[in-house]
Image (tube, rainbow, N blue to C red; front, side):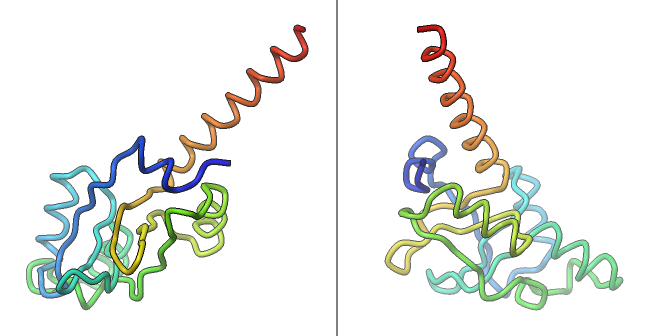
Amino acid sequence: MQTVAQLLTGKGSEVFSVTPQDSVLRAIEVMATRHVGALLVMNQGSLIGIISERDYARKVILKNRSSHDTPVGDIMTAPAFSVTPEDTVHHCMQVMTEKRFRHLPVVKGGRVVGMLSIGDLVKAVIQEQSEHIEQLERYIAG
């Protein structure tokens, strides 16, 4: 069973963030530029929340708020639920399914070391299942 650390080794550990004082418009611009669906909300190096496209849709667009005038801190999901590098991919899938999250920060010793999306986890599970199928086919073929 693959761990988060193993997954991050292949994926990379680059993360993108904004501050709670940044405008929601700034956050959406960063998401669009970086081709990501969520950003960490950091305050002086500490993870305090997460802002996603879903937060934007539900807490800004549907409430007819201004993206330019609304600070990230007003709509972010806080506290951010996180996992550790030692957690398994299956554990992360379970957390995302139960909590209805699409993104999970990875934290080690109080420091963010990566970010996982549901797509990263699905890809890892499919790869793992494909490897199992290949092993079984070789076993059956003799």
